[in-house]
Image (cartoon, rainbow, N blue to C red; front, side, top):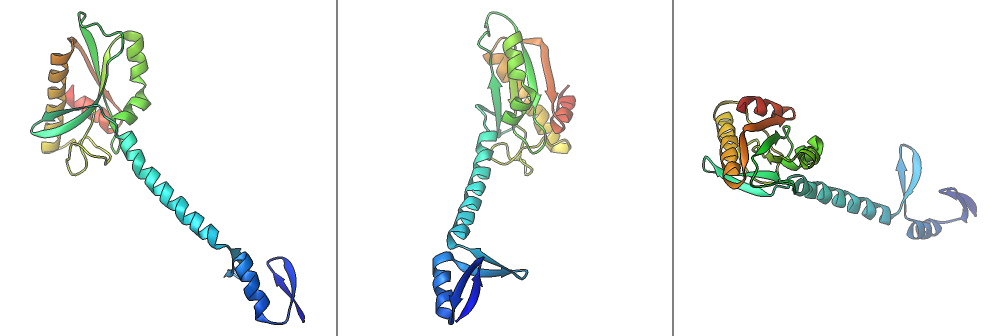
Length: 196
């Protein structure tokens, strides 16, 4: 009989059967950089489940962040936007419009959360619209992050989209044409400059 140290436990053993029993009871012994560590099977499964949940949660967050509530067809392409009309809106009064554009690799709902325009709109009685850029490939809808294309045909399509969006909102709401404002964050700020 000899003394065997099994992960901090002293065990008397003279054959490998005891070690096999310990492995069955406590998991396999794994050598990592010369250190003996016990890694139960449950830990491996738990880790894999955690990675799976994180991946699904990350992908699902695209749907939440990409939340929009309206669409328009502009230049033959379906485009999304998020519209906020305060409860105080009165159809009989001309109402200002703020167009707030998101940064690259973002979405209208993210711009809404960052800018906090909805709170200001409630306090001061104006409508806010958060238009959506396109995917890097130029698609107008979908869950991928959006950008404002600032060159060539992409810029032309985006300027036309904002113009069509203003026309649509003027047809649906009493928008004051002398009080239409555009702002944006980063890439969206460049787009605000382009449409001004």
